[in-house]
Image (cartoon, rainbow, N blue to C red):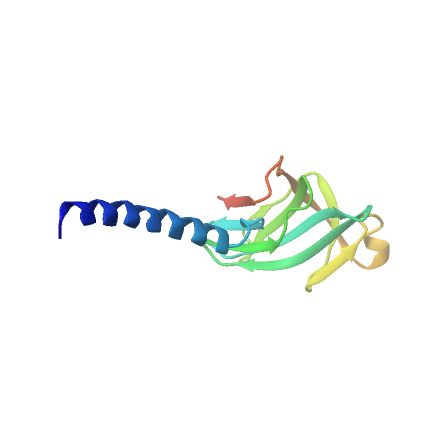
Amino acid sequence: MDRMSFKLFGIGGLAVTIMSAAILALSAGPASADLRVCNKNFDDVYVALGYAQSGDWVSEGWYFIKSNECEIVMEKVRNRYYYFYAEEANGNGVWDGEYSFCVQDEVFEISGSEHCKSRGYERTGFFEADTGEETDYTVSLEE
């Protein structure tokens, strides 16, 4: 191979590599914008989520997250604030807070956060997560 063709191959190879990287970046689709919870605890956990939707409060659960794993709880971060309650599957520990939402033992999606008891639900404290301006956000549950 003579020197001229080597130089052309080198430049062409670099251009192909740059073009391939650009095509891969564009074809990968939009960046992830998920709300996820990572369980950095030794035990499995159940997680409930609270958030504002169409002028009302909504709570939903239960998301089962194994020890040292992460799960997407919402596919798109739409709000600045989300609220979480989590408890270890073995019943030994909880992550809670001062913001109240309705929950129940079975899988649920409950509209409204008032009058939980009179509607047949339990009232439980959730902790707040401020996503700021992030479109992809992770809450970590640690011991």
